[in-house]
Image (cartoon, rainbow, N blue to C red; front, side):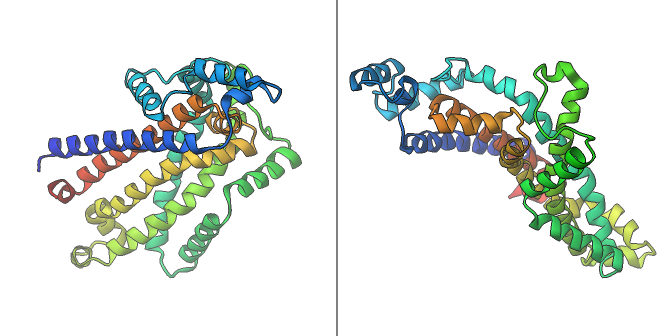
Length: 317
């Protein structure tokens, strides 16, 4: 199979998966208890008023008709309007992403920058005091919940030393760049610590497995040191599992961002999603979840492409 066909197959799979995921999300949202019409009108609303509002919102139509209309509009980039504020879902997501996007992307980048060299170091120093200490530290990092890490960082740097804000985001957004950066330092550190611990373990395990391969032993027999043999002949092989896990980690960062945004009171997509679920604003919840799933599938698609470049055997399957 050519690389172009491999790319097309993966892209088609990602696209079909997104459509199926959107249908499942739509169906599950309709199973949630509560009614947006009752929420919008209040507890004192008459049944007639509720029925009229449901008709105006199109909620009295069949689920298939509602989903078909939503999917048609979404294909053109229209995610609809909020059932409460009547503001465009796309504009709301764009506004909230100025917090969530830098948080997720920076955390993922820092996690990779920290985890890859530390994981390789732990593998090369396997069964030595410093390598063992690093492995134990990463294991502890995996066991500690991210929200607890956030609370500890707030206590140390915001409460005790008053170096950084404990939460919130400037009202002016990135127009107040220094304050915006300061408000994201602790949330980014929280996510980075949690994600780095996982990546270090996988990078170490992958490097150890590669070091024990026959072709690495042959390379070392030519006079190369372990680190030279790994860098020249085994790095590509060692990177494949790390890239796979990194793709999954970036996806889980979206879920982790919801927790971290709650801990640090950040007005991001995660906080908005929790509020919209509570008030049953199905249009915004649907749009937010589908965009999040779209990001997950895009990351998975890019991960597959990178793995295909690192391991040509994957393309030929």
